[in-house]
Image (cartoon, rainbow over all chains, first blue to last red):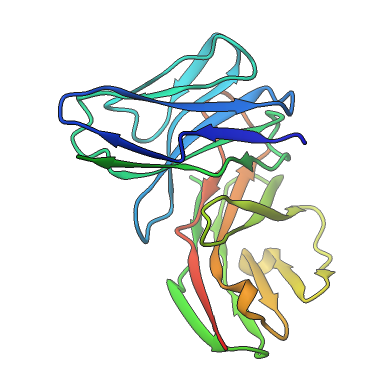
Length: 113
Length: 117
């Protein structure tokens, strides 16, 4: 089945550690997105990528980094500079046009040890 | 600037009641797209519907219906004869047609819906 796969489902980070969240899609979508969701909050855009080898900062990019070396993959690294990383992270993809809905993965829940 | 407001933070209704989730948007574009998503307790967002700004016909899909009114900039979502499985967080979202590298979908903060058995 076509879709978006995020892994792991749960992730724990130690102080000072970088961690990487995986996002893979087989929908042949050009655009991919990372969102952060805090309890009781809406979605906040971290980074997005419209094409391979290019990405743009969203509203809360500080403390995060991404890469887009392949169309199918858009990993997110939560760096030690992100002081409050505990949240639910959602990856999405779309055809890249404004009339197309985004399709979401199941999310990764990141917690601090 | 784009903005989506879902004024209802949380709603609780008894099963089989009808419930309407409100969504008000702001945009300067004449062509835009509106979306509704459902986020069940499992966490993933599920796309429900897209509406184009130039199509004001209301839409019905089973127990779900959507009322789009450009005059009031609203895109409300009604669930008829609600069921416990409808319990979720519902997000309204807006995308403008003049999409460039800096444009993106704007989500409302969501409405948490509790359907009580």
